[in-house]
Amino acid sequence: DEVYYYTVVDSTNQRAKEVAKPKTLFIAERQTEGRGRYGRRWMSECGGLYFSITLPRDLPIEDVPKLTLTTGVAVAKALRARLKWPNDVVYNGRKLCGILCELFGEIEDPMIVVGVGVNVNNPTPPNGVSLKDIHGREFNRLEVLKDVLISFERYYFKLLNGGWGEIRNEWKHMSETLGKDVVVRTAKGVYTGRALDLDGDGGLILDVGGKIVKVFSGDCFYA
Ligand code: BTN
Image (tube, rainbow, N blue to C red):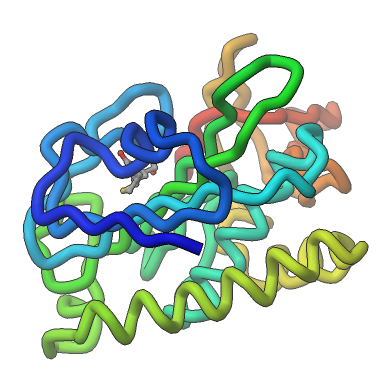
């Protein structure tokens, strides 16, 4: 309902947690403390798109992993890119967009923030790629934001309305992870195997030397 715009900010996810108001958009030209998964830094120089949305309280908490994957499908669709498990939007194996969904607030009444960073015209790290790199021209970030938000809204409502099965199928079609030999680093250990399928709850199903293993979250590398 409301928009907070910053020319420079620590992290839009951080602002979202502090303001703690559902249905609010936080957007910044650049971030000084942009964060990725596992507390990593997310390079956030001028020219990129960095935003966070707080959601209304109508998604069950156990659906947050599905929300992350759903956001990935929505962004990948809007940017005509592909997906790498669990939540990277990629183009030819390089990262075009990162997604960080976090729970915060009271334990009995948590809120959800969805943070999205898209490389648009900004310089990227070596494993990254920007829309400008891909298409050889600068992009209007407002247009990119509009496309991504429209797509996100569509998929978010689909998720709320029992559309997870369909979203999961779309994820599988847009995935560049399935069928590949991967190494997944999780809290429980490192698994090397072939990525077979996306499970109903968002986990990745692996064939590890003939044994079927399911991983819920972690870092995925191509072997
Ligand atoms: C990842 O790939 O590990 C997730 C990166 C998420 C980056 C976005 S940029 C906007 C929002 N604010 C942050 O500090 N992080 C997210």
